[in-house]
Image 1 (spheres, rainbow, N blue to C red):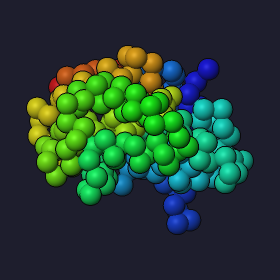
Image 2 (cartoon, rainbow, N blue to C red):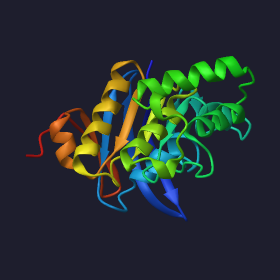
Image 3 (cartoon, helix red, strand yellow):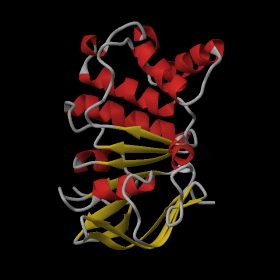
Length: 226
């Protein structure tokens, strides 16, 4: 069963159609790039997946939730199955790495301290940051902060990770490391949708490509941009 299934979906912003006729599916453990110019609808499409931007028409199923008729009380449960990786990190600057992650667990209903410690250690180890859990964000490099953001996204064992330009603020080498990490996460069974402007990353780490262009989403398959 697909993690995401969109068929003939239309997304509007401020009464203007951003995307029309959107049809695609994401399968469990699949890594997919989302590309397109600024203003092409990438962010609107990604935000629609976790019901921040409404779907106006068509068939839109995410993790079994019908986005055309999802009610407000169901949205938090949908979002707990989705991890979001932001370009600008959005870490709490006054807390350590550990406390940033613990804050998320407590906010999503975890109460067992031992279980929280175990899960935090697991995700930090997964992204190679287990030795820096005591540091604050300002003590970390951009790449390290992004690894913490990915760890945060993994906390509740999501079925889908949405990564919005996760390498956009990083140097090329660090961007490659982050992209390799995202591919590794997908290989372990979590679906990853990663928006990027960096076609060299797509070339270096090939995967299926969805392209936003002229108000539509095209499935380019695995392509070469060299």
